Length: 409
Image 1 (cartoon, rainbow, N blue to C red):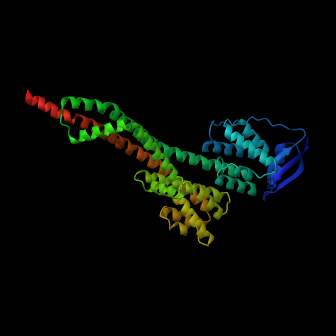
Image 2 (cartoon, one colour):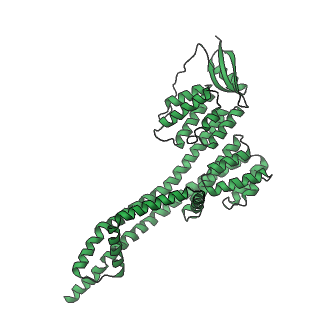
């Protein structure tokens, strides 16, 4: 039996439109509105006020992680595609998430949408959860009437970024942990072990070789100025963070990341994968190329790539192609430039950018595997040299003492 439904929708220009429709259910009304090119905001009926909230959204508590935003996007897309309105979908997501911060933000987004704000404008008020790339793609989905498709693309893009970060962290975790263990062992030896040998050699009146004297002096200084060493290290880290927070410091750090031996290649490939995937997502969503380059420059995660994107944006605005200005920046390999040029010529720029991102994703994985196999023996050697060197320096006087005892016998 049909009944009257009052609806609020947004048209392709983002304007809020209201009206009524006769239909058998809310889903049918939503389907009709979507087929007309509208994005349903709310559909109300006197007979149906509540919707069973059977969809469960599993989130982790605490700060908002990229993975949580990806799950939010995928669930949001499923609800929109199923015919639920924006308000109903946002209500379900706000109620079901266990991340209190994300639930609060989604609740605020829902209230803004209910007051007449566009979804993209409501999301833009929360940049810590939703980046400019996210907001721009949602805006394109609203105007193009394909919000569910765009949200699915966002979920896929974010999930691949999360996986890329996981691979990089897996390559960095092992050397960091081993390095900390080596430092702790050396500190323990300098504070507790070396002073014992110092007292013993003083009692024996032994002549100490140069390495042993240096080690004893370092141990004595470290033990005497132990608090100052930690204060100095803390101040150094704080000063470095302050400097890196400045534009000049950030640029030097990002340039250093790309040049550092062994890990530089990993940082370079990771940055290229992120750049290519973000630009591909924006182009595929229908975001104008100048806006896409501006957003990618902000979300690149590396100042060197951001500057290249900004220069390219200026060149494209002046009438250049996308590929030509990229050639002037060594951070982009010739293969990347040529594939972008082919993408522009064939009209398949988003597909070529996606292939570039997939290629560098696989390169990152191969680099991580190679680094893991290389770093393990290298760190064992470093640990052996550091600890073994201290032990040898400590026991060197023993050889002369034993020799003297043997001569006296």
